[in-house]
Length: 346
Image 1 (cartoon, one colour):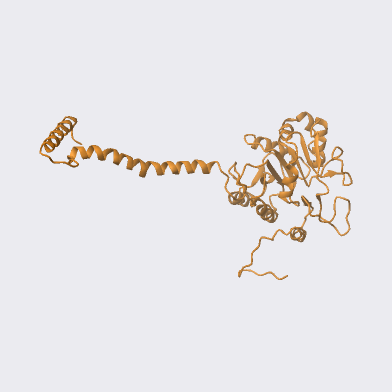
Image 2 (cartoon, one colour):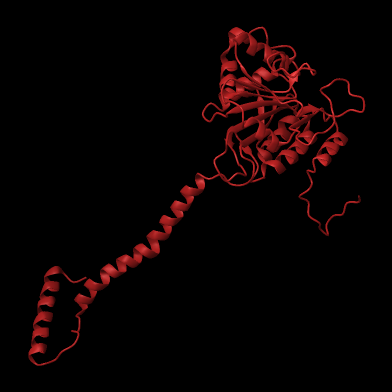
């Protein structure tokens, strides 16, 4: 670019030249010198740079920031100790529910089945709640588990290993789970935390509709025991699957005065006992008859009955034929499309 003194001298010469042209009767748009063209082109080039280079980057940044705050559509994932939850809903969820399925490390096939059952339901855009499903077991004790479980975590990211317990049925695993949940999710608490068995099938839309009407505080939800009772104020909730509001989970994690010496035993019964002794869980809700045991030809108690259309959960699905019966009744494979790659005989 010309020096400022030269530029001013050139502009003065241009002005003299134009005056001379006018005296001679020459009219029209004046011819610009190189320095004048440079002054005009400079801001034009600057605008072109901003429009072509800066603006696209700005749009990319805005898109990135927007995508960080929106949940994509997929199944849940949590790996390397940090939870990355993926949901199917496109709006703010009505509530957040953690389902901890207490199982054993060696039950690989059962976890595979449960991932399919819940993955199909979680993919629905109509699900109004955020539901995260985690498989929970105590610390690993076999060499093959120490290889296969990390492989499973890398693939699915939905496992919690409780270091504070050895695998057990009624030796305190439930208390360890609730205590761990209060710590693991303290920064992003759920509205409810549910303990569930690995032989129960939840129909998530029905569970969401039922839980959505519940209080968010001091809430204890499930299927009342004994089987013949419909009064949630008496007895306790069946261990097949029950939910506590987050405030109760936090309370249990620190209620040593109530839980000390009362951790080992029938664990679903112990939970009811903790709440009774602590004066907690005053908002109790019985989900029967929509939560029940698998229908047996000859029922052993009233917890078992025939499938009903408004079912929330079916328990005691101990083998694949029972799972197939329940899934078939509720038409879980309705979305399967015809294809040349498979054919199923009626």
